[in-house]
Image (cartoon, rainbow, N blue to C red):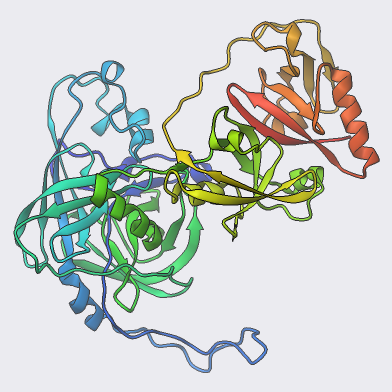
Length: 502
């Protein structure tokens, strides 16, 4: 968001990220969408066989004037006054917990980096938004209106209108606000399909307080995961967007909103041509729930999942490294009641392929509680179908692992591990092998094993001593496999690790 005073709403223009080596910062900034029938662009660049060939002439850049004149009246600037925390961080906690501001707050101790500022103050910020109905409903970003005490929108004609927050969804960074008094606001529609990579798009919004700004570019990539949450599925565009564009729309050439501008990748906080949009499909699933109840209820399966790597696929005897591997099943969850268990690989839900663990999270997250679903899974090399009813997602936190004692142990030098029976380690439980030490330059360290982990199983067999792990390695080699699949407990989280069989 663009700031207009020294006491400003926190912005991720200074949001440091360790993504790609920590060299860049992600900045959040809202954007919106539209509805208009314009001209599509295409170029014949493929031969009869489908092989790429050079176009006979350079394609012309399309004109955007008709598109802009049709949809620009539906795009608004959003002005927000929010109340900063009034007590020290240690007392108040993180007021942005669960939002895209969380890492910013943790690193800088609060807005503007003022750690423990106990003085009440106001923050002012700017964003963008767009009308989706003639009666005044406007889509913007959650981080634009988070903690707002007053929200105003400025229309394309300069009219200032007071707005109220209808609902917010921090997990997708979407929010719905509304202005009253009219039923003839210009509005735009959401696209029903994602744009193609290379397709022209137009972004509109209020960068740095410069309302009514229009920029153009192309779709650079799909399905981007920038580490902001479990439902990351961003569209990457190269149309210039900056602070203040947050919540604004990105349009295709038909005048449909294909995404909501929400973040940029930037070392400086300004545009370098890498921006990220929330897809219109996400907007279409979230906004109706915000309009109805002010929040989003998500389905809950009750499993810990992880990706299926090539090594894990080999360990399980699978042909493809795809699907979501169940590392653990929560007691009394829908998954537990349906008989799902650790080691199952979920490959589809209601007939729709599950590409990986992230894909399963997104698919379940779009479904409502009490929804009946059919899961297809691989278990012991065989395909099975399991029917169950989803529960409702609730926020949960796991306790940290306690300290470990150091009993008599056995060193597995080839892996760089020092192990002991968990039953001999205070606080480690009665099952499995406790990891007492990990050589930082070893294969075990590369696999993410840590001191305090518990190796519960290997090759689907329970472990009680280091010899059991050695035997599992021997069985894997005899079966022609390069690794054995081990179930590892870290704190309250279980995951599978493909450990080389030697």
